[in-house]
Amino acid sequence: MGHTFDLDPVFTPAQARAAGLSRQRLESGPYRQVVRGVYAQLRTGDRAWVEAQAAVLVAAVDEAWASHHTAARLYSAVVPDTPQLHATVPPTVKRRRREGVVVHWGSGETRCFRGVRVSSPTQTFLDLSSTLDLVDLVVLGDSLVRRQRSAGSEAGRGGPSHAHGGGVRRPAPRGTRGAVGG
Image (cartoon, rainbow, N blue to C red; front, side, top):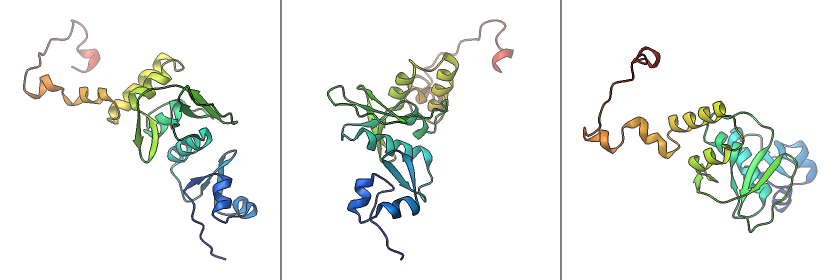
């Protein structure tokens, strides 16, 4: 009755069958469907991580990575909600189509973050720059920097010129001090 199945937290029905899990148990047990063809164990509560894993599983190639909105959510960045998950594969790989998942062709900087191959924060910003409006893009960039997820996060901590007192402080233009809290 309490049989434990050796499954990753996010898995396909084929992986469930290989672990000895019946279709009936899959649909009635402690599992939920993330998108068609991808399930997650209910105890895996981190939505952004589950969605990133699911997007990569749907792409179904080792070279795939979570990207766009899905990557931004994994980084805990502020991004408009979208019902689709996003993954990217190299241009030489055939894209798989699945409802609820957009698989892009592309290249760019990737990294492993929280065990998932994902676009770098800078690449995520660049990927979304063609789809977000200016305000949403600024909010995204600010949230990535504040969470120290991008190269620009060094700016808030003082770059090399400030570390040794070499930075030059310039007065704010007339009439702007009150507006920026200076």
